[in-house]
Image (cartoon, rainbow, N blue to C red; front, side):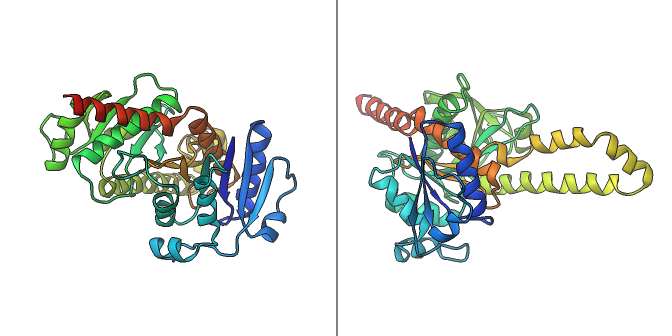
Length: 334
């Protein structure tokens, strides 16, 4: 299994990227990693090069770069050269913690789409109170969507949840303003009708307040609503822990109490830690492309690599392609 990684993407590149890659090759014996980026900087942190190779890249796409223009102009950037490895068949998948829009563009223009998929979706796994988590798509790849796009998201999410997360007959929910049938705007109403007829375990509309309760294994929405929901969850979790910390540090009594339950608080924080869930997959592309969190540490990079290995091993892209093809064939026959 061969994975290409943008070693220069993210807030802590290349150090944390390199450390995470070394952790991964220790764990997965069949894995070979290609780190793409500034060779000298990478070598400073690479203490074990077993099954790790370096491809030197002169340029870096930054968070300030305009995504499409950067991908077209910076052909020698670590992100574009990483995507080229997949396009040319030298890598089975790729990972970057860099500019999300640029990675989306590199995925579309370099890696390419699955035939029949109109728009790829950005799909992270978010935590739930029971620790199982749920997949949400789209969270920002496309701010506008049509009902058929949401149907495609549902199919791709269902395949991923079953193949990678090992969830039998995953529950697919449509994010809406109410749980009753017929709720929502024209987009959600029409998408609801399409999903009811699709070969998925569609459980109907779900509300944002129930997401962290595990109301569905896969939650489908347009990129505008999904991005707002994602950032609300992240912001609420951050604010909550900040308030808890302030409360426990407010007096000697609360400081003593904090010391007694320190390990329990750490366990709660770990349950909400994005690094345990890997990255956000760009579903709908011709090969697995994973967007790791911009602030990824070595643990988060390791988790993203593990997630990517599972996607390749369980043929997620191929299964999505086969499922879409079979649905199109069925529509033609009808």
